[in-house]
Image (cartoon, rainbow, N blue to C red; front, side, top):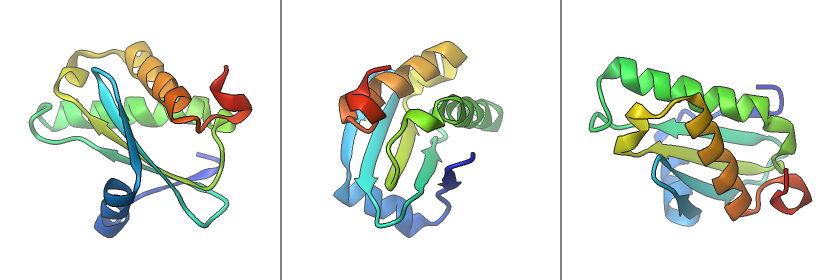
Length: 116
C-alpha cells in the first residue's frame, strides 16, 4: 500500500472502535476515525465465528487488495478498521470490493464527496 500503513496494535483498534463512527452492510462493518497524520492506517479484523484461518486470511487478503486498488480515491489522515461479518466467508472479491466502496461513500471518506 503506497499511501497507507497497517494497523497492528490493540490500542489503535480500540481507539477507533471507541471514538470512530461505524457503517455496516451485510458483509462488513467499517469504523472510521480521523488521525493526526498524513497517512491512512488500515486495520482488518475477522473473528473465529467467520471461519477457520484459511477463510479469515482470505477475507483479509480480499479487503487489502480492494483497498489497494482504490487507495488513491480515499482521503488521507484516517484510521480505518474493516470488520468481517459472518456472511463474508461466502463473499467473492467483487462483493467485498463493492462493500468497501459503498461504505466508504456512506462514510464520506472518498475524494470528490464519495463519487467514483
